[in-house]
Image (cartoon, rainbow, N blue to C red; front, side, top):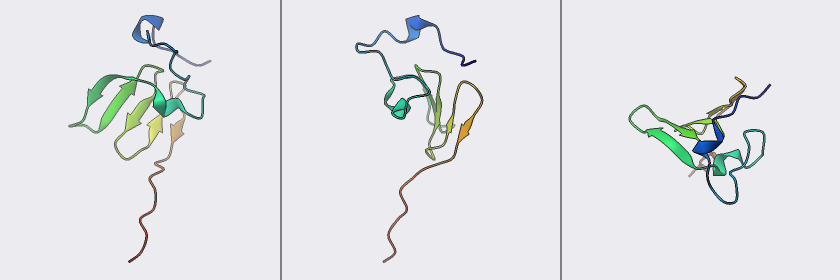
Length: 71
């Protein structure tokens, strides 16, 4: 079972992508704490500064930053 935030938090048109969508990071930010390195998206995803994610069902997505090219 996937937990969702109340629908009142996502009033965007078109609706934000769900936490299970490949483009889940495109959802709007509803709370941000940059000093702690995270943002809460309106689909319930916690997005971390290092590009890692915590989904509403508890699954963790590893950071997926692009690898810098060697000089």
